Amino acid sequence: MNIKEFLSLMESRGAKVFPAPSARDITLANNALQSRRCAMFPAIFTDLYKSASAINLGNGYIFGPIECVRGTRFPIPSIVEINMDMSGIDALRGKTVFGRNDLFWFAFDAFGTFYMLDTLTLRVLRKYDDPYRAMSDCLIAGRF
Amino acid sequence: MQMNKSVAEKRIADLGMDDLPLVQIRPENHPISPDWFKKYHDLVHDFAASLTDSIQELAFMNLPQDDFMDLIMGRRMPENLSIRLRIPLVWGGKLEIDNMFLCMTFPHSYNMDRFIIEQSGNDAIWMPNPAKKVYLPAHMMNGGDGGNATSDRLSQLAAQISSSRGME
Image 1 (spheres, rainbow over the protein chains, first blue to last red):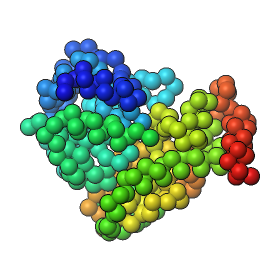
Image 2: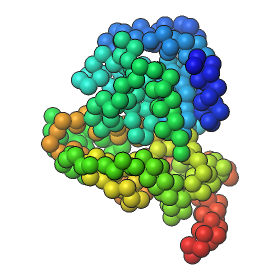
Image 3: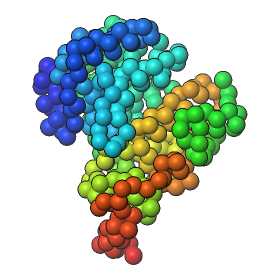
């Protein structure tokens, strides 16, 4: 699978894909994460953000490098904002939260391993070697 | 750090939900049935369809009419709405409508997650426990711009749906 196929698959299931941010926004977000000792974007996220910012399917969200405005509804926070809010939590040391749904949080680390986390304690529930699988689980589990 | 009631109330107020009732529970792990996800998924639809009795609260969310209809018909979850469990399954909560409530994903459900995560490892955890099936902070209940999703209009739609389901 590649980014284009992933986005196409998610859109076919009803996901809303927000417009891609600028290259500068991606760089600034990556630097902001690094300065907060979070994991920097793995290559797949740098590629993803060239085609999309946040992705939303039901209550499943993959956060973008910038806040995504959506009319009168509360905006989708950026990945930087989410990780600033979560900074200082031991269970997230070295990880970056990239998505959530009503049941789970999702994160990656600096080694390119992706995780499903318990929303109550951030305990690791599942490890993924395949980032597409992690991103799909994040969105699909949010579908009504 | 273990929170007492006033500290917990202060924290939840800092997170923008000063009128959210809290309940303290002991986070003791309970076994979960292997088919919980399927049951949860089915129950979410049942919960959504049961919201015809919460029209006043839903009206304050200013949902467009299509979103409102899709929600109470159990067809689709409108953007930025979340269904939460009052007591999580792993801590002994039951898969029942009474154990669920609806709220906005951002900022409220997200901030409730943060509130719970911050208590991780404590012997007792304060959990959000709104009085009704729909939670919206009082400061956001300032009405909307009317349009086609006003309270009266939504009440009328809900009554028609209840009637067609034989609930009256």
